[in-house]
Length: 414
Image (cartoon, rainbow, N blue to C red; front, side):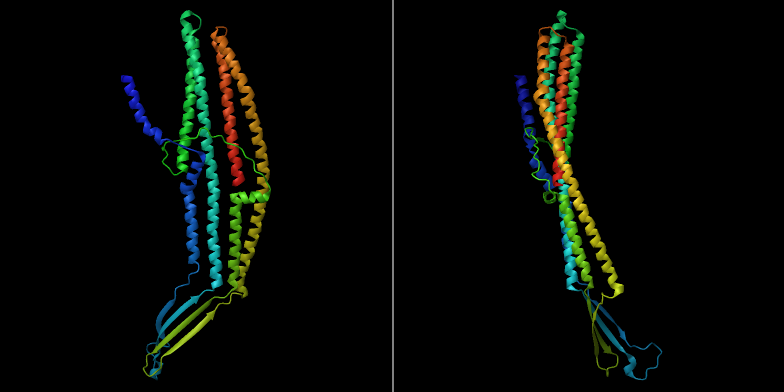
């Protein structure tokens, strides 16, 4: 009764932890990375800052106001008439920029926000690939633990048989020690996989902007699948890849910058108003109104924006060549990755369908002979180790396959 009570209390204590450790499918983790990752949030803030910078680009300069004297004689000068005493002057001045210039500059600055949003998509693709790798490492680690636990049961059975036979001189004590060593080595491998799971959980939490020790589990029934793209032509790749979209936005922004620089040929304006209060009451009040216009087409001024436009045009041509080279390289890379993945899938199928069943049958036959005392323990352990090693190799190949699928998807949508 006392043991039953302890078991019930222990189960009740573990119940909240079990309820708290929710199972997260891969899609849920990727959605949380997209929504909560701090690095991704920074791109949105940068894009928002360019929006306000674009609004600020249409602002005018503040008006200038001044007060002083006008045609006032220096002290000590002989004044022949009160009219020569000069005047007090109030001056107001305002620069009026060309609206076409301001609007072109606004469009250029606003386009840089689109580049930041495209950069966010590129970073999101990288973070999703990182999250998938961690998820698949966790998934394979779970499978390794399951395989190791099943194999440990076989070794535990052989150890018990050795312990039963030893008093009757039907086995050697070294067999018991050897079986025990294999069991402990097997448990060490399980501990290593548990460490891999803990590491993956912590890193996934950091990507989701959650505490590193937050407890959750993954969907162990999930099976990564490889779906090759329908086409690898450059048009389809340019529509799918985020870095190409970012480059397109950069080219578009540079084109807007060229348009803004071309607007430098348009003139700017300035108005000035002067009001004079004569120091002689007999003199009339006077004013001066003046309008000014800049002349940016003169050779010593136009060279600045003309050379800048030429430089930007050459840079755009360079980026277009780089874009074409990127798409061409990606096309060949994706074809190679597809063939490599398909070859890996065939290898894994052969190992799972032919090699492992044969090794399992070998172990079963060896174990049956061992039970009938027709075979030594060391021979059974050899068969057990061969099966364990092959199962481990299959999981290694599966992990490589999953990572190849992640790399393929990253390159396809990068």
